[in-house]
Image (cartoon, rainbow, N blue to C red):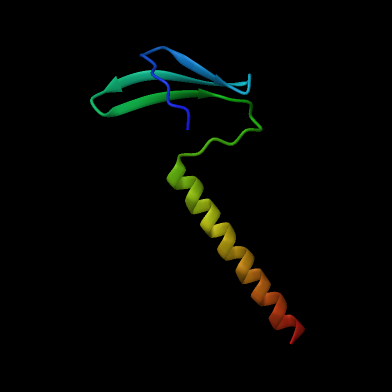
Length: 71
């Protein structure tokens, strides 16, 4: 993991086309601004993990339905 120190209004660039800017710092909360191409999905980690879990459950359900059809 790369750890960087940034101040308010400072940014980092990822892959030449994603910019993450520190918008505000209040206590232990940091507000980030993310500028990325429209084809790059940006999620909070907990939302991303929920999507992954639901996708996995849906694939398993479809697999079971396919097996039932074969029987």
